[in-house]
Image 1 (tube, rainbow, N blue to C red):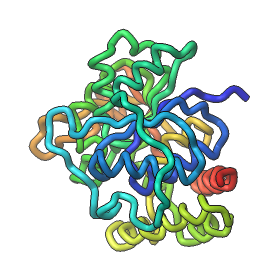
Image 2: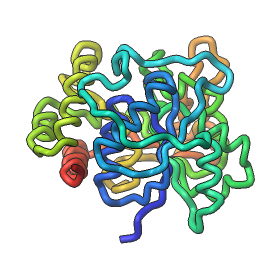
Image 3: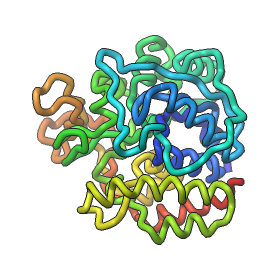
Length: 312
């Protein structure tokens, strides 16, 4: 099977760690690079966490440091979910990888311009790096096959009643991405709050017996505490947001989705950072995103377990 060429842009983060395990363990992708965004923690910490995770799972790809702050706003981090380090729950050995000298934007541009085939971009944090790339290199936009992202929501938020964290953190960047004309798959809270992991699943990952399975379980033990205390509607489950953006590329039939027109609110007093999804086609505009809103959870967990089993 021909592998899908991708660049992953992430801000680890516990669910980013599981996303990277799925991406590298699945065997489906030709991962050209990983770039880092500031979101779940500062750029220093998300870059360090990325290097540690990739070293743990034996991945050897270029890693590029991304933007320190959003395009026009102050940095917002999600420390209450991911801890002071951004990745509490596992004691790491020192990373064996180092970041490249180029910035994320430069790295993305180099890879896309030199590639003989179109590249899919998978952002699972704020969209700052992707927007900055589109602004700096508009001539390369048509070399992007698709953007499969985690962010937003149709009917709910988690930072405000309507705004999800990744979009809330840099709504101007998100607006640029959604207006880009590039095919977009949006995995927002409507689907990721159904992609939940329970204690039995954590035990399953630990029972795999390898280093990656032990780490996955350790991440999720810490990560689940927040959800059990603050998202009681998930009935003991913790939402694995970021792996959905990779899982859709592996098996889109595992998801229920709808093509919709989506805009990002950047100025609203109560709605800044909201993805305004025209789910019922009120505006009668051409859809610019495939919006996922349901997932076959058991297949999702099986996919994760199979990927983790393939790692060291």
